[in-house]
Structure formats: structure tokens, C-alpha cells
Image (tube, rainbow, N blue to C red; front, side, top):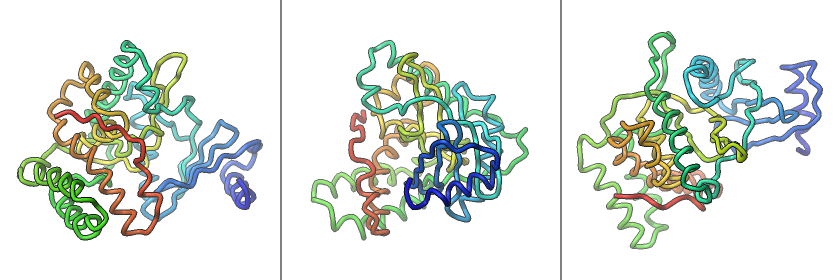
Length: 291
């Protein structure tokens, strides 16, 4: 925190006037929100865009609705305003890939069971009683969207790839687009951004303690959440989820596609925006994808 500190102090006190601010941690790398951790106790998330403001209201309602229905803790909003949401900080450390890799076999199975149970409940939740219109997730899931992404990749990314990389992209998209039913699915609530920094765990208990940041939650393809996990941890983790999410096996072909295509999406956005952050976002990701 440097030149922005007084500004963020004022923003916090506009919302919680009596809060004694002892420490602040600012995270501005998010696409949708700026995040403040206050006193290692409170999370303040400020929307960056008009779309983010609309999504924040939906997110607040959904987190309140989902909180008691999911087997892993998620944020519990205490304040939801037009452009900010505030909730108590969930305790836990980032569930990084090395944590998964170094865990013993019983712990790996436990992590898989926990994440599988979480996604099965999330993807299967009955939204009829919510009386809230849920928009589509931002994650690209339709055939038309992926055809459009492929065309942009050819125009903008191919000039920066080696021949063997172009061959890989061609095979990846050909196998998906040649099948007219490949992208058919029943829309369900999806998290949409299950990156490793959005999954918390307790190293002492070998337990997943929380899933955070529902900023892009919406109706979509359940395989996108599985694809995110494959991209972060590898398919060996997702395979451990079968005990608690047996239906996932039917989702695996699309999940494998999403796990690989996400890297092309980020490269494409980096080239189109000129922002180098996009190019490096997936350095160190997993590679064990089984066919």
C-alpha cells in the first residue's frame, strides 16, 4: 500500500465508519474487482466496471442462497452495495499445485472427495426457489463462441507460434468443432474461475476450508469448472473426485478441451490488449491430461 492508502481508508470508512483500520492488503490484479483485506478480518471487493456492479448484486444474492447448501464454506456477505461487497475473511491458505503433488495418497483422495462433493452440489443446486434470473457465465461455452475464438487465434496468435504449436491448436479445435454435439450441455450454476488462488485449505487438517471469488458465477457448462481444475492441478486430481461426483465422467471430453484452450484464450487476450500479464498467467500450470 503506497500512494493509494488514504484513498482506500476513505472508501472503507464510507462503508464501515467505525472500523479501526490496523492493516490493509490491496490486490488490484483481478479483472472484475479490486480487493482489500482489512485487519486480516474483512474482505472488501470494489467493482471495476459497470458490468462488475451488476454482477456484484447477483453474486451477493447467490452467495447468501448457496452458503447453506454447499459442503465447503464460501463467503457470507454482510454488506452488498452498488459497487462493493463486504464479508468476513475465510481462513485458509492457497491450495497450490505443490500442496496437491506432495500430499500422501489418503490426503489426495480426501481433497478429491471434498472438491467433488462441492462441485456436485453447486452444479446440482435447485435455483427455482431463488426467484432470481441467473445470467450466463462469462466463460465461453457455445460452439459459435469457440468458432469465433478459433478464428481470432488463427489471425492473431498463429504468427507467434512455432509449427508444432500450430499443429496442436489445429488438433485441439478440430476434435471439438468437428462434432456438432460436442458443446451440448444442460446449463447449471458454475463458479467460472476455479483458479488455485480461489481454493483455500488447512495444512494442519488436510481439509479444503473455502472456495472464494464468485465474481463470474453464472449458468454454464459444468465441464468448465472441471477444466479449470485440470489446468491448475492436472487430471490426477479430477479423477479423485469420482467418488463424490460420479456424473463428471461424461463431462471429461469438454473439460479436457477447456483445460487446454484456456491458455490460448489468455494468449489471445494478451496479444489483443497488449498487456503482458495475460502471457504469463499460466506459467507453471499442470500438464497431465489423459485421453
